[in-house]
Length: 305
Image (cartoon, rainbow, N blue to C red; front, top):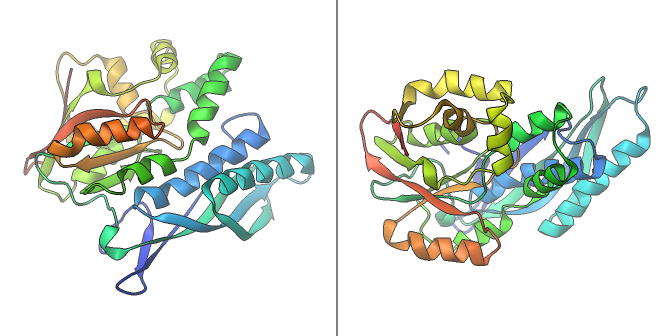
């Protein structure tokens, strides 16, 4: 691969390439088991975003031995292992270190046919853009840390973040996906900016079509915007053109850093409606066409109501 992407790819033969990725982070929910599941789903996502199938994984853990019960680490690893079993991925080992702060994640290896590899860099004018999960996890996680989220909201966002992108990737595997990425820490607009950079293309988004969790809108209106959203906006605002009708709240949500977010896929316009039906049939009920790719040498992202 000549350009940075969601994972590293090494071509073994004309029939097979390996995908390698690694990701880990500090807890975003209090329940250790749920944290393990979310971290595993997040690490696996980059392989799905490349059109591949994850095969093996290795645990990565940093644990404060002197201040935390070892049973906590056991529950985290159990959560991760159960998510790997769901994905039909084999845990083959791992490594742990003592640290003052708890961290957990995975190194993942997958396979893909070289001709079926998805990257960020194949946008074509006229393509429609499909997002498979709603936005708002960063904002809701900020509310959780502030003790403002109800148990039902915590349950909902935990389920969303722990949901694998496997079904979405499998549903799209028979389509000519021109470009793909998963939406994580850079937020929707940050990751779209990565896709248009160097493409001589731009994007037109319809904000009203972008799926957003209701609770995220509520918490954002209370000012519960994570610091990462402001950093994302500072870095990528120069590549975005907002309609005057887009309110500041919506702008913040579109830069909200996600954890284990959905896939963003660019596919031919004439296939978008059927692809959306297939995604929804595969369980991606919030999947939506959120915009389209346009010819634009300035490589801007235009956000309209």
